[in-house]
Amino acid sequence: MQNSIQHALEKLPFIVLFSNLPFMILLAAMILSPRIQTRWVAIALAIAGFWLSCTALIDFLIMPSMYVSGMMRDPGFAAMGYTLFWAFNRVELLCAAGIVTALLALRHRQSAFEVSQCGSQSRWAIALGALLISLTLLDTYGLTPQMSALAFGSVPEHVPASMTWMHGAYWLAEGLKLGGLAMLARLCIPDLQPTSSPAIAG
Image (cartoon, rainbow, N blue to C red; front, side):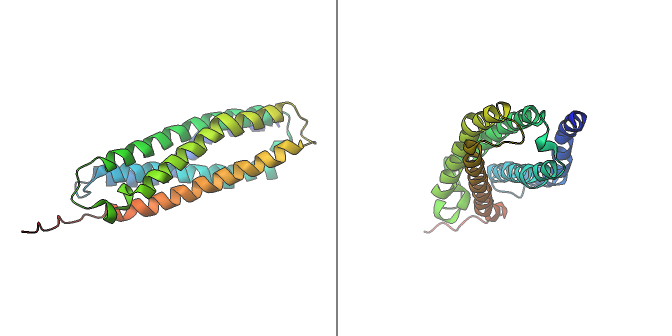
């Protein structure tokens, strides 16, 4: 079982990369397209899409597969889980920082359209960016270290009571992140369409 865990951990980065490769190529083409009035919108959307797909892949495919196969009951799974989420939480921090940077750049960018007509420049977008980076900091420096410490100090057959509510908090944070990313994408997607400059009133 230890070899199976190690083998799965080694293959995980390649699974995440290749599952997102078509999406990343498509968004890269959108970022480089001269028809897009603001590339910051495409950059924010690309990061949000990458983050959303990676989170869904880990939470709804990889982790359930490990649970069904019995890998979570192996004594070596705690170390493997800590390594996986330590690395992924840092990737999430980079994604959150990139999204907030893009949104702040959009807020200060001279644009042909008003803020009220542009979802990516609205206060809702900034609030979603702040929510995403706050949830990521909570996961990285709060939930993940605490859950890993409990996992290292317990046996697979016995789950501490505190681990149960931490799992609930983790899934709540994941749900908020997925919802926030989806809402942010909904705000940004309309702004990818080229718009004509409004006529200047005489």
